[in-house]
Length: 304
Image 1 (spheres, rainbow, N blue to C red):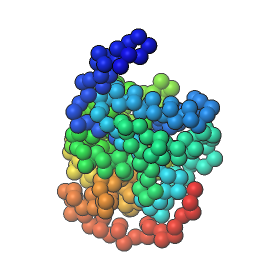
Image 2 (cartoon, rainbow, N blue to C red):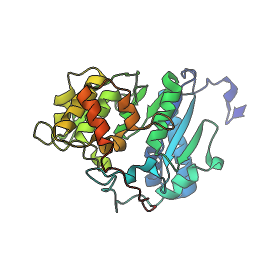
Image 3 (spheres, rainbow, N blue to C red):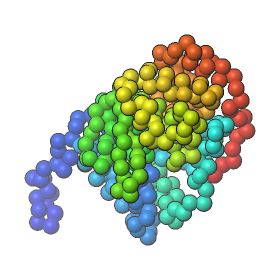
């Protein structure tokens, strides 16, 4: 085909060299936020979103893409029903967002606004993070997660490290490290199950999750979590170290775990996960006893 004097049939495929079978598992909120905050019209924002997704597919050499979003009225896997130290996402009220953001999220979920390279999935029962992890467990080495949300670092399967522009390979056990942000803050990074257990210690300020109340008598932030787990190379050892810490102060780890754990498949739960681990007898008994405590509300929260 001749377009503006250029014979397009002779041009190389811009996606030449993509990894055969690779599916990009994409958190749609990041691209949607960028698109909504940089244009004024909804139709323009939809096109901008499409361009961003195609760019991310190109950078990751992906053949196709599954975009995930959480609906405003989502049940969020029941996380709002959990009686944790702090109310789940209770710090997110009244935060300003681009006016186009929610209309754009609704528009890009419509099949008429998809393009052949990707599909969009709006989740009303789970959170997008859960669905992304389920994609990762289903696709295994053929899936590649891209998200601005650090929670997805807990995946044991391939992960796109945006700041380095590389695909990190699967991490069955994982790792953690500390980095200093340009503003001088200490941040914990990592991958896989060990990163998840570090979150169980330090919590997640973005989702208003406390984590452990104290570790060795002190508040436990990123540096404390790193100090506790830096030499551990096995998820079973990491789990025992963290549950030991909860048990030593008689804090129920199930609420914090329920909030932080991302569901691997339908019917999965944090309780099921810990039952798969090689815990000490004391920790097995502690988890069993904690299951009978009052930590789950039957009151259904109001929709957003």
